[in-house]
Image (cartoon, rainbow, N blue to C red; front, top):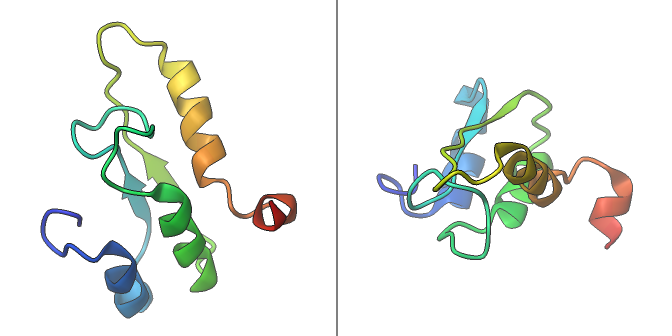
Length: 90
């Protein structure tokens, strides 16, 4: 979506009624969701939550140079977990 649409959050808001699930990955490279990525997934996930979406969000992951994929998935979970009330207050 980043490559085609550019404005990810507006695109999500405008098309949520036609969305069956979300699939995310790091940009560029489909690596972990860290400070080297072009997309700010905390804001994207909050925007998804604000639409009332309650379905699945998949995570694509291609670890670099033997990186621990479990650690990367745990980090992605922390970045994207906006459904818990205490996360929204922080």
